[in-house]
Image (cartoon, rainbow, N blue to C red; front, side):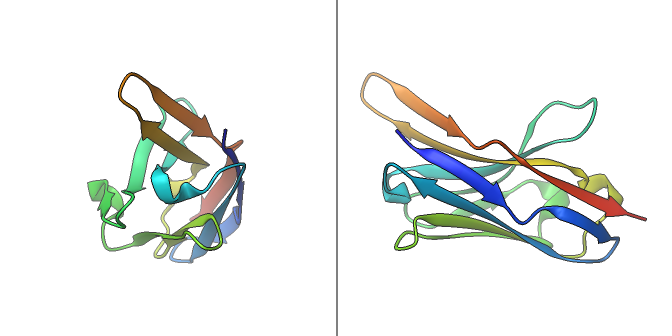
Length: 119
């Protein structure tokens, strides 16, 4: 079992920056794929960035060059540095962890943190 708690959201002006944190407990994150998802009002939840167990990262096109995902296994935490924020980045951001076993997959979600970017 993994419990995930996000923090760091808030209100920021267009062009500003925020750093989201995801603190994990119950199990070490080193064995998990870790993601940041977001869900804007009236839209489906979308995967924003992923960091795998080895530290390799992937991003959706719209955040490349602006967002950076990282993790610290020793602190059991993951981060999302968001720069040059735009109003279209406004959403609830969720931390997600998953591990794939031979016969099963386990997914864990945080409760989300609101990011609002004003124009």
